[in-house]
Length: 339
Image 1 (cartoon, rainbow, N blue to C red):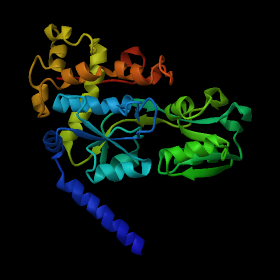
Image 2 (image 1 turned 180 degrees about the vertical axis):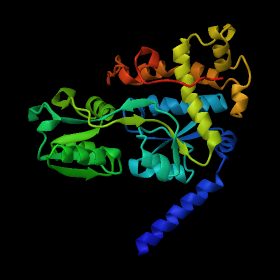
Image 3 (image 1 turned 90 degrees about the vertical axis):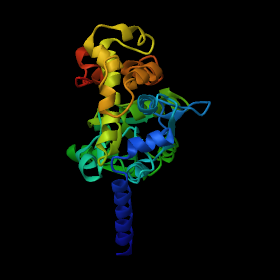
């Protein structure tokens, strides 16, 4: 009973804090002069500090794009590394303004946690990685395996569903922390590691001594649309984050990137004029500067630049665009009209 009471008080405090900040996030960000962005901070390609301590990755650059759109400065970001268990409470309580932290968009998270997913920045799916020496070539050969997995994630639930659906058993080896789960896998405490395919690729290139000692199995067992998250009581801030991501996609569709954005300021195309703030009104609708999209594109790049810089085919992760390509190239990435 005591623990339930404590949980109830904690939930009430989080709800009060969330209500108290209703509609105020944009003002708070402008007053503070920085966007507080919750990230993983441990995932190569998405958010991890470089040798200089600067946060790098696709998720980190989404934070920077929002900062550039709102404050005119892509460096005006306070990165807050958060574990899977910490992330939602940190956003609900107002510790961070947004999450950009390889978080899967699900119905429960979108409806029951007081949160809103703004859009998808990376379409992912859950997979399995095993030591090459194990001689396994398919996830359907994993009956009875010990599987390392992080708790508090959709990964854990997908794992159970997959083995149950295929009449196989497994021994879950569960950890709260990312680092301890990977260490356990590498040290041989479990036969298999499971998480999103992007996470497996990241671990293989950055957390093991020899990547060739590990193989990612071909099966993808779930849909994992990853994207930014905001509180659901602040539509103004939700709109800013959502349309900043859409602007990065629309810029790619227009062929506008960080190297040529200035050349497009003189374009006669009304759509480009609206995107870059030459025609006024889009920024005013969101109560931010008319150069919001221009600043994000000029300082961070369009979606393609961000993707290729951190996770693309010429990076250690080596992802093709695939479903993350624009709709015009056969992918799922699509921006509604900016007008």
